[in-house]
Image (cartoon, rainbow, N blue to C red; front, top):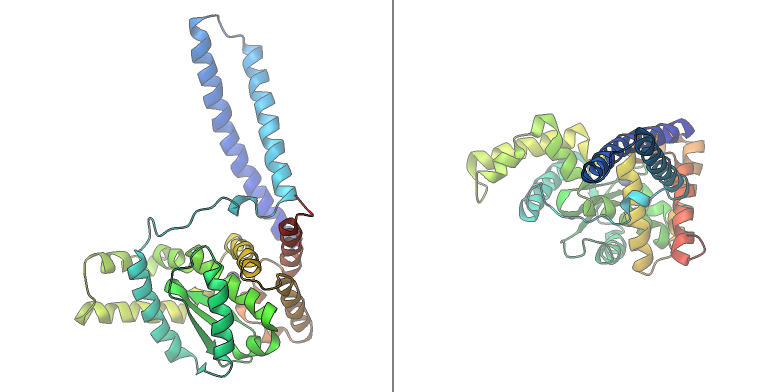
Length: 303
Ligand SMILES: [Zn+2]
């Protein structure tokens, strides 16, 4: 887990180094241009400018990485720009849900509770106007995932394990994935389904062959488990969006911490009961640490 974290930092450091290079380069060029008219630029001053700019920017980036695990998500704006329109996203979500319903057994036991809590966190999210639908999958695995268009799935084992604050935090995390369009992006970027956008783009009203094609694509997506696949940054982003929405909805954000702790316990006693979503990165300990940081920050006890 530490190694994973280190790798992320290394990658970000590399990205910063690259940005830094261009910043330094363009700054030096600009300086050179402005000075060409007045006095000749000495080599020494350019080097010292780049050096000062370089170390301060790099130090600042490192400091941010060290102190704020969520700094890159703080001013993010979310939209369907560059993706399927919201209407088509909803269509895709509907088709995927048809396939999810074929693959898993849905349960209505506890659904009223899940829906009530889920709708509350969804309204408090950064995508409050979407029509969210919550589904319970009958399964002994502890798992949750979400699809485009606001379809959110939790297993009965998770629903039974979690108190209201904890359930709210899981649902809020999944809503976070929907806010950031993670599954939609993954699906649109995946090789096999590259034609999906054009499928939507070329038709108004899905019928006949197109409907069948979409159905086939949806079945492939669900079978491949693509809906539950997110990278580490996406998980971090969903945690960040989730903890804010859950608090805004009036739940105790500590529920996210105790949920992680329950998951940790289950993973120690019977790892097979953990669905892919929790067996995956980032490590639970890191997620606890980051969530604790964010709760303190929201309370104003940490900057
Ligand atoms: Zn997630």
